Length: 480
Image (cartoon, rainbow, N blue to C red; front, side, top):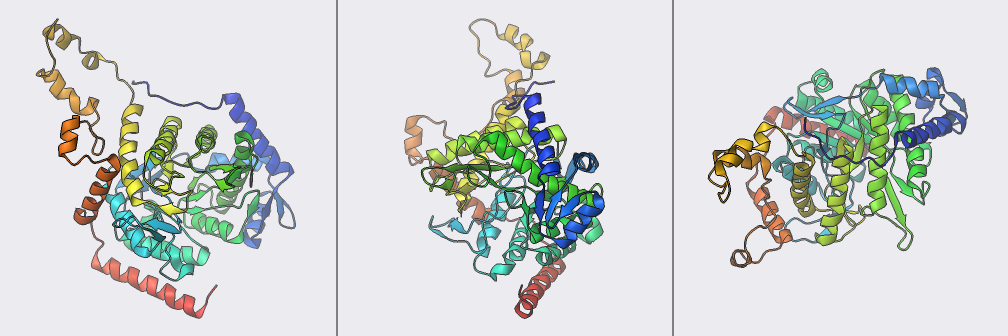
């Protein structure tokens, strides 16, 4: 077996201290639960409540961890297995909810529109190292309260890869489930082979909103995978220390886990405690800081110790343009995610402190992920790879270029870039003296022009149109 590079930021003792502190906080301090339905369910499961403050006994937390699946299989839109979430399996995709977007054709930073979600999904479909789709945006040119529904509609039409989405509330989520069931051929088929994962989020520190909890419960009832993770800001909504922030985030995530298992034992649940530091000079939440990587990587290690599939992030940058800063920050995160074995890794293509989605950065990160994945494959050492026979055949002063062994192994042994330049200086000049950013732009435009995802059947498209239109009409008559 090939030994692969791994990171280990926390000792077993350190992981246990963080876990036990979280158990103690849940049991002794508790959390605020702002949904009467969720509150009732938690009390019936064995929690105690004083108003909205709920305390969760560690025995219940442990039993919930045991009942949750340690591996979750996710399929593509066609019912083919695409992701095996758990263990050290890693999959990358874009992130959600950026209010701004860098236009793919002009580079202009502007408000995001529905077509940006469509464009991101198309690029996701085409890029080999992007494994699932998120929208990279918060749609701003449709009814704002239905942006989540329009996002799923846009993505489903433009990629067959798995989708990770979100919803404003349980009412919108039910429509999204109905849309996905139409594409899958029915709710039972969707439950058997889910191609959608929905993200919900508590409010750090220790607050769980009505919408967040009721979305979680609806997903558990329907046996559809849910990500329930906070977004801590170290030094602002969570302690400034990585260990302290992680213990807070773990409490919040485990509250969701307990509720999901109380609703449906064995409900598919994806955890995590991601976040990043508050930059004390700018008072901004930094996505590119090394502490962001430390927190995400440590979170992965803790959730691996609990044997829960883990949601984390990589491929983001604080930079305002695709440049050396964006590449350096993204690559550090990608290596961290692969080294710790994060499972569902989102935010590829995030820029500008998480405020702007960049399809160009997404394309560049696809190359970086491919490069990092090659490094993380490690070095196999066996008879074929030691190459003793060919070494003796060539002997002193010979060369290996024409050897059959070279022809047999060079494709798997030497990673072949699609964007990085390895030509001579003269050949680089003849090709236009283009930077990697230039080449990424060329590749992006070519993919947008030539790639055509497998379309949905006409009957499914018509039903999706009807569901979206019905949501619009219902909202007009019954706004939230």
